[in-house]
Image 1 (cartoon, rainbow, N blue to C red):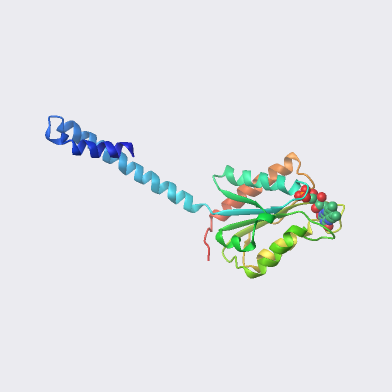
Image 2: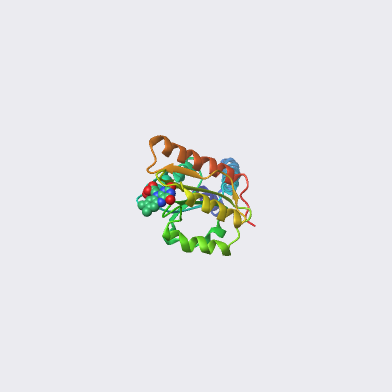
Length: 204
Ligand SMILES: Cc1cc2nc3c(=O)[nH]c(=O)nc-3n(C[C@H](O)[C@H](O)[C@H](O)COP(=O)(O)O)c2cc1C
């Protein structure tokens, strides 16, 4: 940008009529080449950005385990150059999912294989949206002491399918707080998801 301004100043000063003419021309050739390179680089950057999907990750976590998973998954997405908007379900509406190319939902399981209370309104609102063409996946912390292990993850997978979303990965269930290996599995889940989402980033 600074060099483009210098170009204008040089022209206004009439330097092309002086003995510096030759030098000005060669300077201009350099500027033109530089400008073409800049345009090419900007277009390439835009194309790369366009190839990456807009991703939203919405989660519920009471004691922090699912939130740890969400953080590791978001880190996996970002490690691939992807961007993700991370929100608590208490600050989100299901209708906003339609603004994104790809959707990640995270929830711990509550009661006797139920969704967390704070997910119930969101879950109901999902009946009124269409996510056809969007990639999606679900994760959540669970406890194998309960017979309905991670049932909230399965409920959300089924609900996303009802909206027309393409659930591209099996639901990721982690026992309580993620161990180092499980946190790494969450990061891989994020990086795998962003690649799958990028391959078909198209909203209907
Ligand atoms: C009252 C209660 C009911 C639960 N019910 C289930 C259940 O049915 N299935 C399951 O896998 N985990 C169940 N859990 C375990 C939680 O999902 C688990 O503690 C989880 O790690 C909480 O995640 P968070 O830290 O993100 O809140 C239950 C926990 C409580 C306190």
